[in-house]
Figure 1 (cartoon, rainbow, N blue to C red):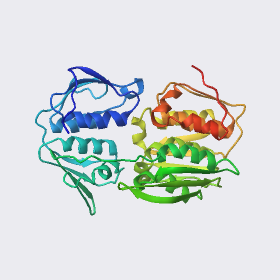
Figure 2 (cartoon, rainbow, N blue to C red):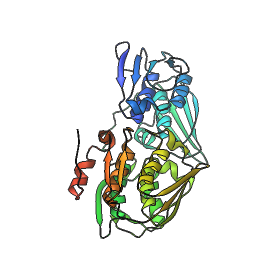
Figure 3 (tube, helix red, strand yellow):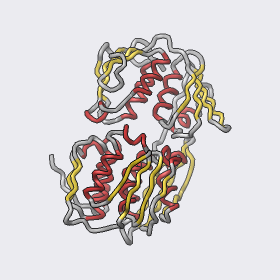
Figure 4 (cartoon, helix red, strand yellow):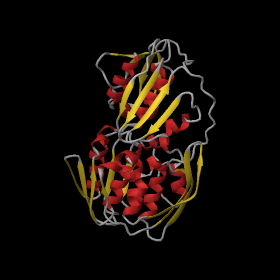
Length: 365
């Protein structure tokens, strides 16, 4: 910890990855003698980093220009980081950034979590009991003891349940289909998509479930299903954040009114995922209404849209690209998606796997 080094004003380009930006800034904020320029792609540069900047400033880091909360920025780390007390919200990335910053700070960093979010970072650190203590009572408390020696950690990373969701959606809505996806992470904080759809009569099973390095993994078996309209309370949001664009597609292709509550944070993703997905659905002839932090989608069932054309502009949003791709496959709509290469950030094998199960598409450079 604290051993990173870079020449003054070295440029770090985070590309499309908000996760990378938040976690690395967390580490660097409490690493001595760091002065770096920070930038992302067009999409990431639009996203507010205010919560991250405010929190890292509590540790003693400094960001320029003052009162600017999106990239490009400059970071000047603190040489005397002191642990903080932090109340975590729905963002596991900010929580993880605080843990990583706390590891390299003097004293203890305490994180109070009222609403449980993804816990990969604390799971990863649990074998280093000298640096972390997790108390699960009514509210979760994570205590990070700074400036301790860290033992090496051996990690086998399973498949991503968020990326798997797009293949599951395709299978669920395609009659006579069945799919097995092997070695996927089944952490309970990541299963909102699957648990929600099971309530709507989705035929989804988990097999060969095992625990490795405090993380649960296994195989996902999914079969085509006669789904009911989706009713998603705000409690599902934190466990299915990345899957909401594909959930909107499923809702559009299931007869009846689906309702998604507590989703306003989707406006600050790679794009405003509520507005942009509404635009996609409108092109498919599906009505939706967003008001008072609630989205209603008036689903029509799986339909043929071979006479329809759908266009997704350069949003730099991998999840919208993937969701629209699935919509096109299921409806036959002639669909053009700009900037599809952003998908390679989170799911580099997406097109290869889609091709292997029969998808037809053309790439334009």
